[in-house]
Image 1 (cartoon, rainbow, N blue to C red):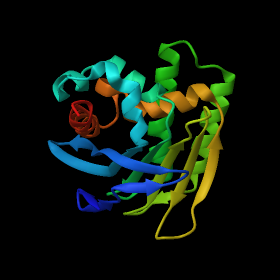
Image 2: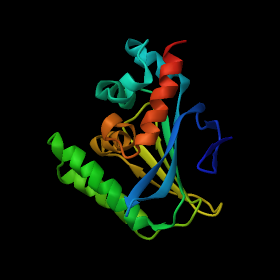
Image 3: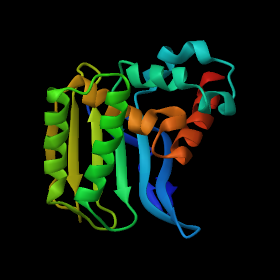
Length: 205
């Protein structure tokens, strides 16, 4: 287990194959100079992802951290990815949904890809989270299969059976990945920093 702000993350998760914990961090907001931590994050990837990032061999963590092209290549790499998000502070599911919806919508609008189909897909995601309540240690998993432009969102609380939704809009799926793997513009700078450090080590082997 790897501890992220006192929350345990397995070093490996097996879905269709083994996924390794490539990076971890937290999301937080600052209120009156206090840092309020909301979620711990684990980024799981197939080890084969390294093969798709060969051109960055020899780059150090600081260079990778600021390189949008590196993170774009990471998002587009045809490997399975899984983002495990664990609640540190209790929030309503609707609060998380609004953050996700706003971030994805803004990214889509900036590249002129926000159409009715994308809006409908985002509304389905928002509706899924609307009735959820993120108690401490609740888990959201965002799984992106290697072979399709889809995403599977699952929610589990208190060890109860997971509930899930499929997202089939490729543009929304891409921007969901970019929200967490968007390099300098991602939601969690600490996760991006940690990923950069891990990839510096892997790409130097």
